[in-house]
Length: 291
Image 1: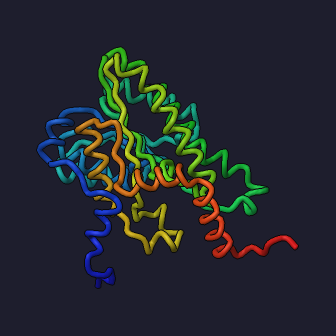
Image 2: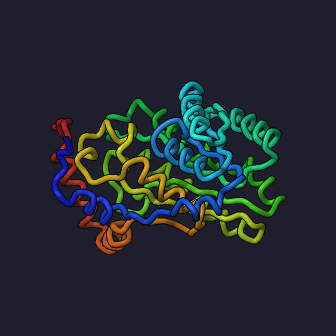
Image 3: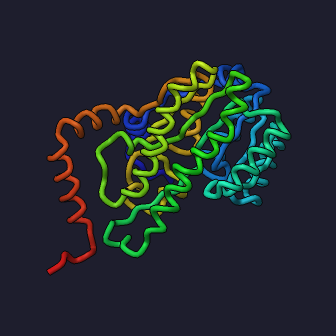
């Protein structure tokens, strides 16, 4: 039984946006194209891969867990779609090189890269003193790995003078920063800025980029944070609809309605905003302040 209050779907749409893409438009854009989706074993990546395959794309499924990728591929094939499984750890540069060599050998090139894989972490700095590896791992998955994958695929895209890169980012890189999210938001921001910089060098060669500043999506990644579970968020399928719109229409970015006013207020009222979030952190912290 749905315990959400009346009007909840409208609230979700107002906060996170509801613009997607029609099946016909997506089919026109991706039929017989090769689309590589990272983080394709669960959540947004799985839902995106299924939607793209249903539209006629050959979908290359990339994630660490081979068994789960096989399960997703089986569902796609049973529904009449085309999917290939390419297990790879995107935190390992050598694994990325092997992945791209294999993909280019088997498919000749990648028409669209959906960079969706990500690692979330919510931890205060006081709990991170002996955990520098959290920052290293988060950067490896959210910034260094995606950048390495783009660098490996770009030569073939530029040579063929066609290609599109979709970065599934987070609205958090555009809104005021939040305590406990330092490692996650810093790593996502790094790839966001890196991709925006290189996009200025790529368009002349026929390679375009889109960034989806995704609002809250209720997935396994958000589930451990109780506060997020009570907030209006998208389903993986709704999120995939936004990613597929980026694939089909190739906009510069897709941004939820709440982001631009939050971004403007955060820049205009930076100090008061920081103090507000500082007060929230203190109220919700279980750690006693030093005496």
